[in-house]
Length: 165
Image 1 (cartoon, rainbow, N blue to C red):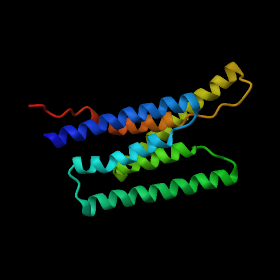
Image 2 (image 1 turned 135 degrees about the vertical axis):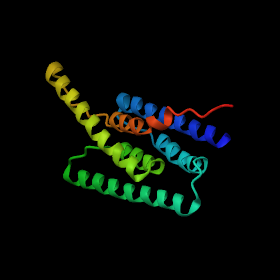
Image 3 (image 1 turned 180 degrees about the horizontal axis):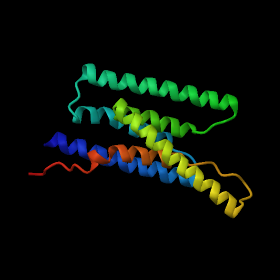
Image 4 (image 1 turned 120 degrees about the vertical axis):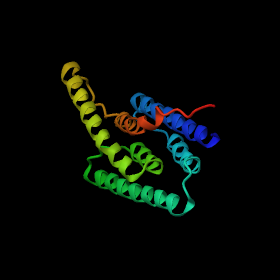
């Protein structure tokens, strides 16, 4: 029961951290390194609370996250080189930290939902730009789309409250 409570508490903490990341991304277009580090640091505790074995479960999860991080860093570096950065460094780190929490299937679902949410967010920004005609171009707070995708994927686990009997 204590492991279930810890497991659920960690999911709630992750959801709160994701919402905080969204709000800071909207406000300042940055996601703090300390927040991404805290999300990543919570993953091993979540693994133990979930009953994962060190080998092969945790090893595979860590390997998956390293592969995701390498791919995302490569995409970011290529975007910098081509001067077409879509995701900022904080977004890349947030996705890398989330890869520690999610299975490959869940992470793929996150990416799909994130892409759709990002498209809706971009359409909103374009419409706002046409209507208000701001003097400077605003960057897209993609942390909002990442948070939406992550909460969408985590929702089934978040609504399953452990019994307190």
